[in-house]
Image (cartoon, one colour):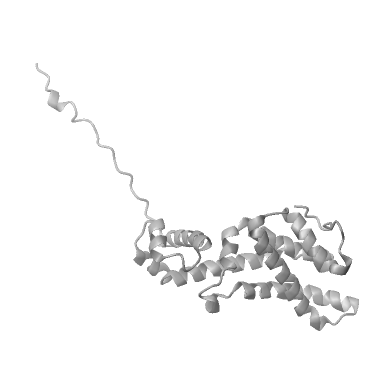
Amino acid sequence: MAIDGGTSGTNEQKPRRGRRVRMTGAERREQLLDIGRTLFAAKGFEGTSVEEIAAKAGVSKPVVYEHFGGKEGLYAVVVDREMRQLLDMVTGALTAGHPRELLEQAAFALLDYIERYTDGFRILVRDSPVAQSTGTFASLISDIATQVEDILGLEFKARGFDPKLAPLYAQALVGSVALTGQWWLDVRKPKKAEVAAHLVNLAWHGLDGLEQKPRLIGHRKS
């Protein structure tokens, strides 16, 4: 019998195209938040477009609007999450101990956040176009200062100082750490522990009593 050469390929299967995995609404929302967070950190609010967010996510623009109502809504959620993350880290770090060690804990908490959540910190220190609805970095620093204020108030009272001045000093201390953190964000020198030691050195001793080689008294050394 003659073999029909035209049937040799009848059993071959064509390669199947991979199916796109359909995300749930919650998964899509998280994906858009992650993409938005990265783009806002790199380009800022004004430099980021809904078109770019949608393209990175592989969706159409209406999907972004469906979840967040627009770029402003997405940005507001990103900022709110970062503010809560930083505040939780600072307040969680303030445990019982010597007042100087509490200052170390606060400094480390902010520097830890900068190190672990660099994109988030970049977003927070930018001017927010939706600041009135989501808060600003200044208002966040004020929230953290309120936590420190209680600690300073007790210390002032024990030393015979006016505890009513504690809010002023709390703002000054936390503000100096925050601004130093913005500088350290880019230079990353010296090491985190050394930055914390010098910040606390200035806060604790003042310029008149600075230690030449400041040391950390808490359990953290890095």
